[in-house]
Picture (cartoon, rainbow, N blue to C red):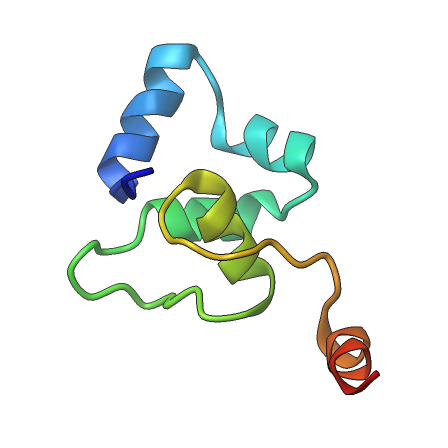
Length: 82
């Protein structure tokens, strides 16, 4: 599956009549963080989406490949150590 650009995701939201806030709440993410990610600069993003909720959002939106992990912080590192 090819990756999408932020502009393509915003266009998809517009064509389907979705709001960023609605999508975020439906998927259990912070609406503010989803907005930051989608409205970030494509060439030099401030949010790299390398880990945590930002990573999960980027994967869910199709901006990057990876796995969505619902564990965060201490839970994540405890799970890795087990």
